[in-house]
Length: 114
Ligand code: 5GP
Ligand code: ZN
Image (cartoon, rainbow, N blue to C red; front, side):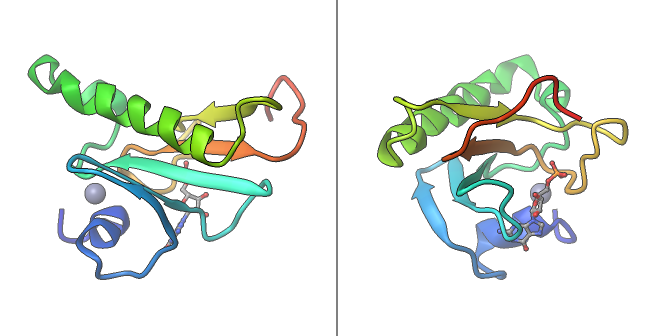
């Protein structure tokens, strides 16, 4: 989508600190990190929410979480642990309407989230 920030990042029109990329997925550091490691993992194809991905495109979601696994291993977050967050819609405070999995790592976190 032309006016989508994360689609622009996929196209390389906005520079980012990329940590992982494959054919369908991109991971980069959040511009406003909320933890020592704060990575966003996105499908390259534009969908606003998980619920918008049609069944025939389910591979995109599989690849997304396989990429998450690679990133947390690469950043050595698996021993101490990490948190994944997918904000969806206004109640969840989704600011960028392109599916993204937040990875938070490098500090302990509280529960429940705010
Ligand atoms: P949301 O609230 O939609 O789940 O999270 C969007 C995230 O995108 C926020 O954590 C915000 O800091 C991050 N973000 C917004 N603009 C940019 C940008 O231009 N570059 C990067 N790397 N992250 C961004
Ligand atoms: Zn997009």
